[in-house]
Length: 466
Ligand code: CA
Image (cartoon, rainbow, N blue to C red):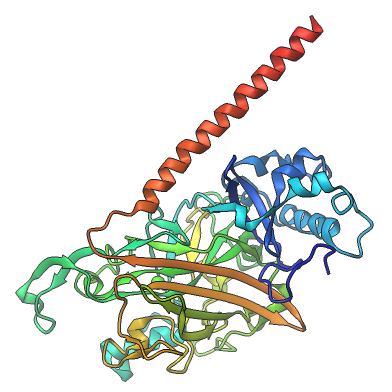
């Protein structure tokens, strides 16, 4: 329990403490931690001398990404968590913030006064395909029940290398893409046209941020090392243009159908915060076939996480969002550690700030599917916007997609917030990306101003000494 008021249904309880990057109207982006409906300003804590016991230089929290912090190790990440727990828990004897109003107002900033930014500069983005329920559904749709899973699927976590430049923060609009579409669905020999995507879709996923020291090129990660190389997790929406994908994916997999936008939620929840919510995957065991020894997770039965997930659509002009699916992160066959280990099996160097998408998370029922492709069964049935008379097969212009997730057990709650994105008509200009550029300019201006002030102060001090 915290002395600081936190609503019982808040995603950001004292046991969560997720990391993110924020700014205010008058200050540059820097690192913070969500607590209730406030942001703990880690740079302000550092300036106040409250982070001096950490084993690293806490001035890295003044940086505009978490990459430097992610590049430390798990003991460092844990030390910050335990220090914050100490500062904000009711039982603590450390009352330095609680009893100092001026400090409190510098350290705790209402979320309503903040703007969130990308938590990290994403080095490389990889997307997996690790929910057996999802892979089976897609397989049945395209290859029939008997060949649903490709022969390799149970032997390794299938994935592809994605595009990091278009990984965007929640709230960024998504412009309906143009691309190549096959003219005749039954006859690829008839060629293609350049047109707007008609089958615009979502994929509900979790995104894993890699942390820790980069393994040398040529040296694969082991299962024992894997967990310590995971910094934390966000919600991820892998926007997908199904009609573009259908024509282009042969034989090397998705390309432009997936590279126009991938959205992530702003707060990175550490796996230490999720410790109380460990569970078995929906597969329970991996024995038919057993993975090769390097991919065996001895703790497989307890390496998934019980996180409730929901997808909702808010149509243009509506003030309400209507759920279309609810599922759970535990519906995975290959877990994060196995994805990470397999990614590095050939000696690939995994760097802090790399992002790994879990793959679409689908459950086993018609209302627990993680994509509209599955919910509408390839467009053959209407998807109900629950609580309304509306239906969809794929996304319409003006639709805002809202994905949310939280874990709860014994009255404790750890949430991820939301990842959202609104579909703009094809040919629209993405104003938000321009805003982001402007905000970078503003950030530089603010940094310049701060340096000029510091310079003036130093000059004054020098004058006094003279
Ligand atoms: Ca995906």
